[in-house]
Image (tube, rainbow, N blue to C red; front, side, top):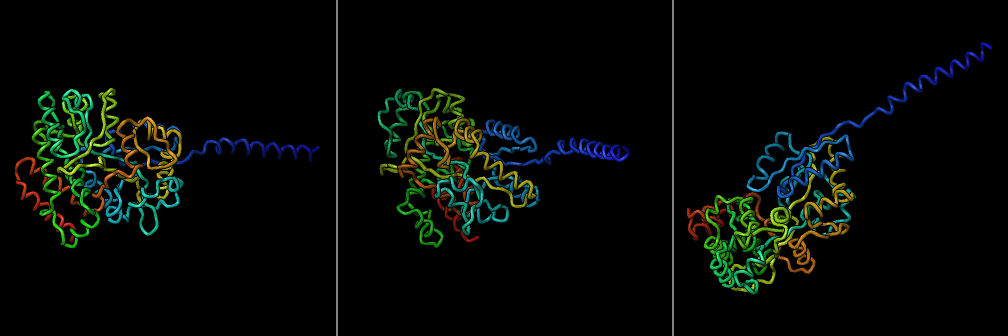
Length: 420
């Protein structure tokens, strides 16, 4: 009897121990991880925050703190300082090519991530180094002149202008109809130093050869006709644009366009969410950016503007969660829905269907697939030169430099930066 009671006692003791241990096991929670993310897309800042909240609901142990930059803000100076101090974000963006080389120490190898096999192969090229992939494409983007079709009809403009002379004639008709032809937000130096400047490069006979010859000293910006032509276009937008272009920022410029006060804006498909919010019924489309009287067939510049990167200096735990979040963005139904329905992004991934993105994205994608796009070449510029291009052009807009001085400033900047 004593043996039986002893045996039962042992069983009860073991059961009690097991029951005591079970709740502790069940209450074990994953360690809370906070990710800092730098978002360059100010146009979709609200929607991006909403997407990260959706991710947090699925992953309660993760908190994502989003810092949105863009518009007039410098997207690199504070990032460089943060990285140097060891307090940089866990997820940030990089434009690729020369910038990928310069930021190599902060770029985590993403070659083995699941999304890599779903990217359009050419979209990976800017972030490939030594056969490894260091960034995930944010999206495809196209830019050119966006125009209000209703205002063009009101002014009696039948066909889209394909030359500078035709653009001047269209601007004159718009002006006579009481419509400001161009929304000119030249407070933003990236519009001038990146997007506008690129047109003169993209319309060279052989852009790659031209950049090579610039680096070797065989060509000069100051004596190249395309840059003279570009300033003719800039002068046209100033003559027929809104007042005070140097104090008109991104938001003000878009407001001029969406309110119907201006008929043409130099922007890209990324402003579709802003248009949808302010003027959802606006009938819009892309038109060429002519810089001379040679007809322009290619109406859009299309490229991957930025790549998501994971900070190589972050802790292993944070890097693991950062990679998981990036993959979720392009593989989960929630992430894909935000990309296409909320952000109106054109995916750089063949497995994500691009539907209902709006007229600007649809034109961009058609141009890209048909091989009619102009290249974006600023990724091949010396790093830092675009800011100088933009600032010098702003001085010209403010009449602090004349045409010859501006062209010489462009050339001096190229020579100085290419030697560094």
